Image: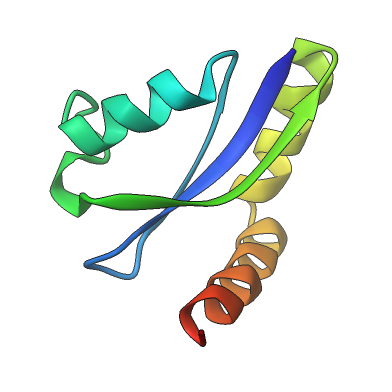
Length: 84
């Protein structure tokens, strides 16, 4: 199983989209500063995740969520989570 996920910075207006086979380990790596791309934006909360049975399908959806249309959807989810 492969998981496509989006994490949202708690400090800045930043959303990162990725794909992994171990979501807990991956989020820990982001929040611990092991990932150069996301290190300046820590800490993160999980905004969205969905599992796919194949790597090809997961990669297709990862690309979608990295696109402008996909990021717009994620920003709507982010707004809903921030309004509570």
